[in-house]
Image 1: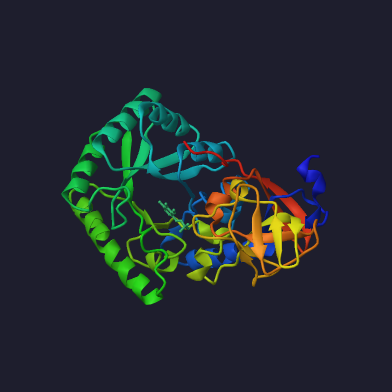
Image 2: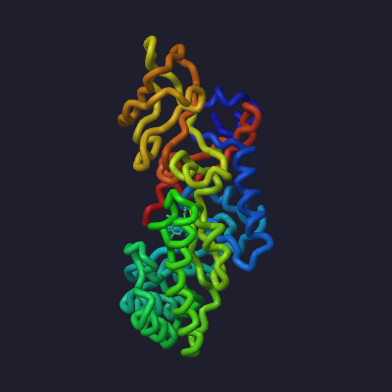
Length: 361
Ligand SMILES: Cc1ncc(COP(=O)(O)O)c(C=O)c1O
């Protein structure tokens, strides 16, 4: 059956497991984030790694306060560009001659920036851009304490900026610093203090680069846990928050102003007096941040997640009942599905393909 033929029917008629988006919760989240950026110098560049859906990306842009889209992988950028998104930041390194050529080719149809932190990679990207007859815009990724990617914010960053400036085919568009190690800091005051401190060296680097004749028009960073802190730092231009749109039970601990819009519709396939088994497991639900909750019975406790089963203790439902699980991590959950079912007042309102599901390269 064509999924669109189900539009207008009750949500419970969807074959399970299925990813459900509560339209009202999503709209609340998009409104809340857009309101924060509409009147600020900094703008939003929503990260789509969480949902990987072009329709939702377009909704994030339409909500306001946004200048473009962020993604994690080249193949995600290709999926977005093929679906009408024209200003994209790949907030990661694109490494190797083959991918450099694909990035250059992509820049023929959209503005697609990527992060760089290594001279050899800069040389590859430049060669590919020249071969394709395009200019590839890049941001230098600076390590502001996460110890994942990025150069330190001192001489090495300055030297890399000079290398980029003399590499034909490339344009230095700015700097990226991602404070991923701070986004879940539970205490809001401590989070603010640490974020402000982490960005200081990056802002100083931007000034030093400008003094050296290497202006950086864009300074990009931030996540859902820090959007209102990082987005308020003078000199920060773009915020890469993404999880806010759909949310999950992990992030809600520090960001209760956003609602859980994402759930997994599942069927009770077995039940006894004091437990039930839902027909979704690891193959349909991320679990790195813990076990899921049961929307209909928050007091129930998931025992574990197996490949295709999740047993919940302390709850019982007749076999065949549809239940909704709130995943601990939305990002890895969406990657496992092919469509988002948009639900309003218990009925299916729309179906959005998850174009970039499985786009890992
Ligand atoms: C480079 C980068 N920017 C921004 C984000 C922000 O995402 P979120 O909204 O999930 O905090 C992430 C998350 O992994 C990231 O890796």
